Image (cartoon, rainbow, N blue to C red; front, side):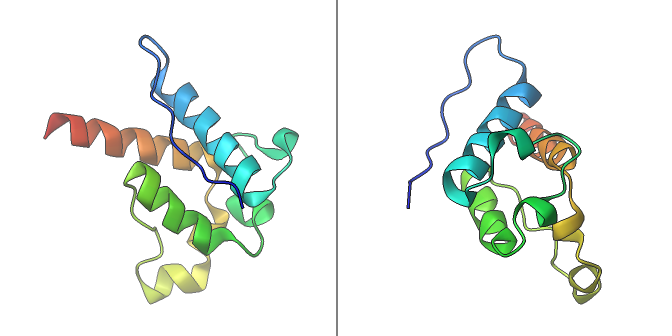
Length: 102
């Protein structure tokens, strides 16, 4: 099992592009997802049919983003599986911006 370490964002790099590339790297290294499958419109449930909960725990640890299935309703609807890469990038970017403002 390969360890994932978030790389520092290069100065001047687009924040969302950087987050996307780091998420793709995480999905490839830890989830065994083929690189070509990681697209903005891809749903996490399709990429990670059995690993999605562990993935959210890693996302929380690496990026400081909460797991989106805190209620029984959202869990029963499978929101964490239906989340797209684009939605996750947006969530992480907004969380990082909030952290910078505090």
